[in-house]
Length: 160
Image (tube, rainbow, N blue to C red):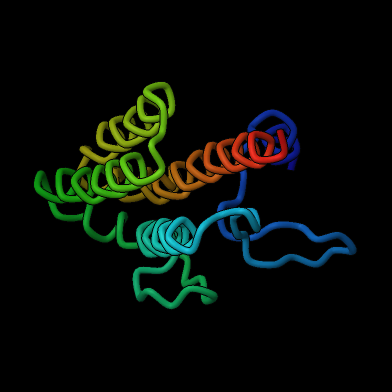
């Protein structure tokens, strides 16, 4: 219990799927209203891809079966971690190019997937580490934060 309390205070990981609306209620996390249809569509793709990779390999969004595609694919010796690296790299590359993310953010995203790759190389325990790490969810949270900042800057520029 003390470990969880410490982690909640010191490890600030944003949930890329749900947001608090107050009163103990949550709703699906979306981009700001100023986002274009294409940006909203791309964010939904990033969310769905992260959900399938980390939360539910069956692909049904609101249902969390607890195990994503990552830990299952990583169970394949040698080739599994490399396949998941390719899947994670596709997500970060596609989102980075579409949203025109800066080099620092792209470096963070790539560092996450490299860390996940190194964690998943041990044959059996690598699946557990992959499940614990949740690389795509972390990257989706970073992407959402950066896109929100970009949208705020765009809104401020339009007001001036």
